[in-house]
Amino acid sequence: MQPINPNVRGTFPPPVMEARRWIAGKSFPPDRPLINLSQAAPVDPPPEALKQAMARAVMEDDATHLYGPVLGNQDLRDELASQWSKAYGGTIRPAQVAVTAGCNQAFCAAMATIAGPGDEVILPLPCYFNHKMWLDMQGVATVGLPTDDDLLPDPERAAHLITERTRAIVLVTPNNPAGVEYPPALIAAFRDLARAHGLALLVDETYRDFHSSTDAPHDLFTDPDWDETLVHLYSFSKAYRLTGHRVGALMASEARLAEVEKFLDTVAICPPQVGQVGALWGMRNLSEWLAGERLEILARRDALIAGFQRLPDWQLLGCGAYFAYVRHPFDAPSDTVAKRLVDDAGLLTLPGTMFGPLKPEGGSGQAEATLRIAFANADADGLAEVAQRLAAITP
Image (cartoon, rainbow, N blue to C red; front, side, top):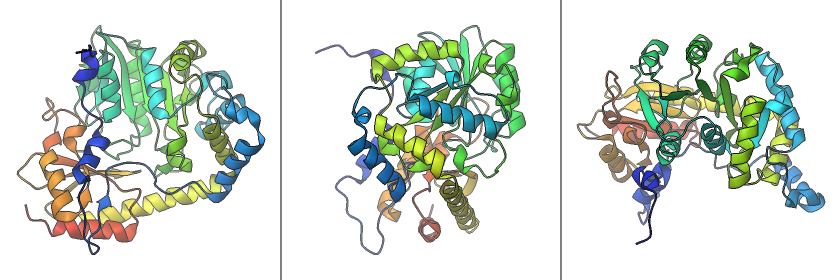
């Protein structure tokens, strides 16, 4: 048998693909069709005008079919630097911006420059599974930071986890899978902690366009020396429905991006051209449309909160952006419960066991008692139906 890297073999299968296998070959009655709450991605296509702009680029701009700069097209990097500087009240230069083939690649590229085999990275629990998968495959140890019932990480608790092998702390806000938004003061406290120990602070803001506040989510970019500590990650997939075109962004020091360029050149050479066209056109033309998308997601969040108020046996631990994180009432592990919900309620969710260890030391909200509900593709009526179906299932 040919050899397989034990680090790759040792990590878990892709969770969303595993969940899809739970419904493979199954049929659902017309009066109770499957409601897929497993993946945090829009299924609707981009707005018509955005599709037309991308189509014109394909038909009229021959450069669209060629390799581009490894760190992304200059016009998109310029636009990101300008809009981010204005939104966050700080100064971000185009040379501190890279475009990537999705935010997952931004994380992998940044982390490849930060940590290697034997190093450690702190992830709050529950954590985004792809982050842990990448660290596993690189031989980097994930150090779980338990959170309490508010699902907010504690900088003081994180400080006790730092060792001589620690290289970075990762924050995702609004959080995947918990849905909670980290307050600006909390993010700043983690920046101060990382800076004091010479660590990188990765802040993944994939879902920032759906934050409940229109104010800047944090003030880290107002620090003139922000790039000494902060590595910022972003995704265009959710904002403009470009999931299939793979466009993300990474903001860091010029020195780090010089190292990131090496990684990206060996993986994808350059981010997809058509996706970059779409991202740039969206940034320049769809601010009002995106504001409406944000309000719709917030309305769905409110509908889900209202639904769970009618479910006394269930506990809503966190809810925001695309996600609700809930404690189920069953005397069974969450992966068993998730599979039962497919058969008994026509609901596909992801179990907490996919987002962290079963019983983190010193933390609550254990993985075996929780589920993630990704509600971006269910409207208010659909979410009311979700609550009704859950109410009909007896523990």
